[in-house]
Length: 348
Image (cartoon, rainbow, N blue to C red; front, side, top):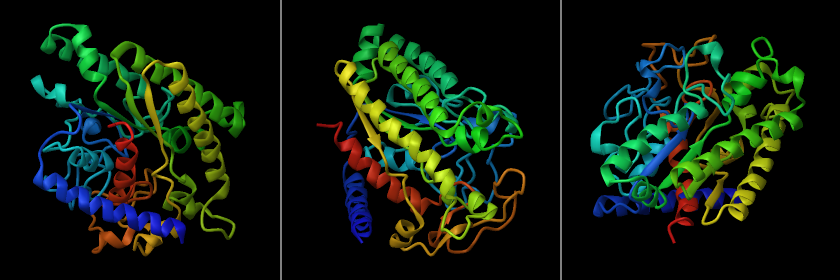
């Protein structure tokens, strides 16, 4: 019941903030940068040779521009957060960002990518987190030219919000796929979570040291054992695949400690752990969602993505998942509202 009240509160806050955005176009931050995977990808994979590509219907069925490469029926959390932060439109994907647009922010996210460079390789090309940071270096150089020098660029970027949503694929498209990867034979879940967080910490330190980032939202991984893909494999009578969720919990617990450590050790750092994606079936039902364990569209048995051209379910708002892995816009709304509450802590 407590969570249901909390979720309802987020919905009310979200509606209020939507109204505020409509009456005020003032940016709450000068720029917004997005790093991560398919949960926030807004088109970077469209030009890649990969099976993790969704530039076709039914994806985007509820998005004004139609299919754009977003792995959902409408907006993802990065889109909604950009709106809540006062931007007139979503920040552009790095693949198409041009000219002065980069000074307001860029989305580097890539479907099937992860913290580890090999993650997702069985699906084809993807832009790993290391490569996304390299792309940000390109953006940094552009901003430095626009503002005159590196110092001015770092001052500008220190006022911006960085949003990270990564780690899911290091399990879905790595550790949980022994037919393609050796990580599950080399490491137990405890060891693997430690290795992941250690690498992630190095990547975030690089962002802080090299580009001046200070305000950073680090999202925990959602309950992967509650996705339709995992539920279809069997749950031994429980609502979700508990062993999968237990492994993710190990990662999230270490992630919280990492965030605390970064704040203690990096001068001026304002890192926030964001647990907004930790939505279990009972929490989703509290949102008014009625179908929590099945996809809204007919999915491919190979990728778990919607089959091209197939019609999706009629009432998307009643479904938690659009395909076998990715939430619908109604869930993204709730996650974005809760995440925005976390971002407010950085905007003091």
